[in-house]
Length: 267
Length: 277
Ligand SMILES: Nc1ncnc2c1ncn2[C@@H]1O[C@H](COP(=O)(O)OP(=O)(O)OP(=O)(O)O)[C@@H](O)[C@H]1O
Ligand SMILES: [Mg+2]
Image (tube, rainbow over all chains, first blue to last red):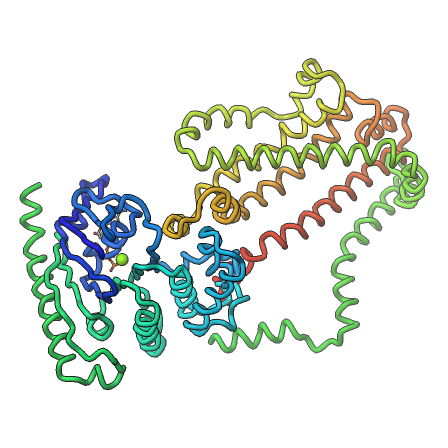
């Protein structure tokens, strides 16, 4: 479904270049829910923007369903890390959700059905006529998610969507994502820096190293399909998986602390 | 601490006074200063007895007399028409050019020094020039108004278009929002606070230039009439014309404020939310 091969991204900058991604290779199957974890600043957002066609990689390729990605693909939706800024403050919640559908030239009635369904799924049907700035951070986040779902994407990319919400809302949103993923059968790539969240949500967890960034590990999450905030997190297997990933990330950041000196010499 | 501040705010919003006396108090707030000023003027003109300084009473009486239906139709309405025409034209041109320049860094680099130069020319000096080119007619007066009020609108629009949030730009790209919808829903709406600020400045410049273009070269209009009164030493009449201009400017500014409140409803909401209200 989604093939990333040898992806490298170097940002040009005044104080020399920044190599945000060194060499990433992985692929996602159709209908898979994969989580991407990695330390802050390791290039998760950069990777997502390359996959979404919002940014050209310096080398390597992204292929979506057999087609090489050079611009934003038509059936992909993105929930941005800065979700509050990704909503149009001059449009009401429903118009925010329906804007992409208008561009798809869907008839009014169909747009309404889709926005109703999506807003209902995230529990915000009652706020359809509010403006985004009248909502709390968690509610704004759910609007951004509803907009992505209503778009009926085949691939959904989410960039640390729960960073700014409290623990309870976060747990609810995590369950929401799994429900939506099953109901709408999409391929989901979910970026987070929270290891527990990645293990709880994913079928698979990709671990990114810190800069220079590669895919450090690719862990299959063999937990039962039905997940539950209390029981799943209490399972022995859950603890094993999170310990394994935690160790990987620790390794990654230790090798990273050794790296900068090397890089410094090379310059 | 936050609870205490909420209490004081609530107290300020709901004073002990009843509804009627609150309205009276508000009316007093609004009218107090104008009344004091008129009183002071009255005193000054009565005490000095200056010929050039008629009392407010005289001016008011003259006002009713001078600005009857005939003058309204012959001088005032055409002036207002030119003002609104010139302002509208200046706004449309300013916003259109501003969007183009705001979106293209290359065009900006080429045109910015030239724009700064033209902006620095005081528009009234263009009146004699435009008279030569266009003659003394409505087109010339419109050109004078446009040449003055376009600058703040143009420059503010450029700023507004340049400041569109990159996250919203990415959102539009990712969801395939482009073309006309992209222009109206993303660019113009994002820039609307700056555009409105520019238009407000442009409006007051347009009023000034409306009067000036008529004072220079005209045989009708508000500016012309006021100059005529002054030349024929019809002092109370002249004052009543100035009063009319003041009222006109005030009325237009109130209308503009109403339009602005509607257009920028979301913006005021965002700002209030950011302040934590
Ligand atoms: N536009 C840019 N220009 C130059 N360098 C950039 C730019 N964007 C990101 N970087 C650099 O690239 C690296 C990766 O950034 P990125 O935003 O992808 O990290 P991230 O993993 O998403 O971090 P976080 O978890 O904090 O969101 C960082 O070192 C950052 O400084
Ligand atoms: Mg990021």
